[in-house]
Image (cartoon, rainbow over all chains, first blue to last red):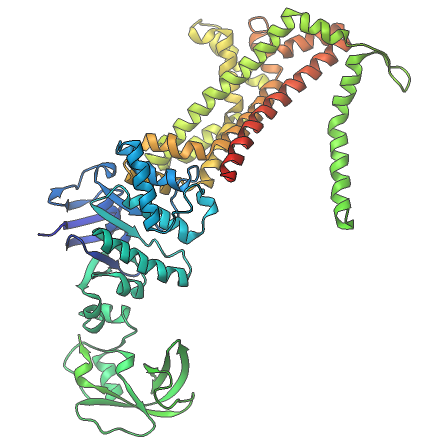
Length: 335
Length: 265
């Protein structure tokens, strides 16, 4: 049975329909990501679950109970916000104890629990520090501790890492995932960063224009995009409609769009004879190093095809070089 | 001292001298019987001794302190509640609250006191009590300063997020407001109330027109003293200044001790 369930959920701000008929089920103990470009409604969906937004119509269930009209403070949900939200007038320990005090937990027990959870998030030596004395990463870890110390039924994370620099962000992703697994928390993570979603999630729900575009495991989402939007959002797919494809390869295809990932394209100076493959001829326009891969933008006529090659694996091409591209037909996705 | 620091230092010293001269001169006037040449003669503290023996003076000083504190406390509570309701429930009304709170800037004390008198004196009600009228008038006069101070303080803390965070942790909105938001804007509240203390201590028009006989405070006393005895009036002036300084110093000291404690731990 699903732990969280959205049923025919609609949400409008004035005449602006932000969520359209959302139906979504989430299982207990999983970390699920709502991924999508800004303005797709992912944060609003999260806030509807938190109770910080009222829904226009539809139902929200948590642990079998209809919580659509329950006050946020009575939902038993923990939340970490994008902006730093620690209370500036309280030190780290007092911040963490706040939620326990609201639940009228015995003071000695609250103190013990808070210290333990701060140990878990690695802030055991910062108990008496005030938020202004902490770095952004430490503040978000304290906010995480504050959200989970009350043992919420559900933990919501609304882009908690987007204000944190890349290196620290990566270590926090791993850390949040570890804590979530260790404590068996059901969590929903909102992000616009596909790599972050891939690293952290059991399941990704990709949202677009107020609807769930595709729900899949991270690897499936990457290799089997179901719509052209998903293909364009995930993994830098090359995405062409049938007419462009005809122009590019000289072959007609029996679908609306064709998508293929940049790393499955073969690139060479001489034509390669390969069965069941599309072949294209073009000129290297630019080559950009992206860490361990090198991305070529190849112009085939006036159409740009992106090609990714592992650094040092094959011969390098310069801008202006004439190249031949081959893509196995079986690896293309027809949408 | 480095060369580049000299200019600002000189300017600061000049401003300090300019601000302190009236006070210093008043102190000298209040302590010397005779100041016709360059050096004042006839040093005495008798004026001060007499003042502190004068029950009427002490009572008037007490009245000024009471009339400063009551309207400030009332206005702070009023503004906090109004801002709480507007920010959380009716954000659209906030600009109207702002306009209403800014109107008193443009009202002169004379006009305000005359309007209040003509409105309430004719048909006696509970509001026609002179002291209540005076408290009300001071609330109106200090409203813009208190409002602006508290509003700026609220802008500086990220109020919506803090309230939402508290709510997710199980706090009611009103509890979150007074437990989380108010402590964070305490310094803004302190600064604006000090400003308001200054305004009320400096007022003469309102108290003269509204309550000179019902509530003769130290400003009224000073005015009477000016007519009879210049030494006495200087002494009264010095004491008013000292009391104002003392209030500010005590409040700021309490504040700084608190925030120092927060940093040191």
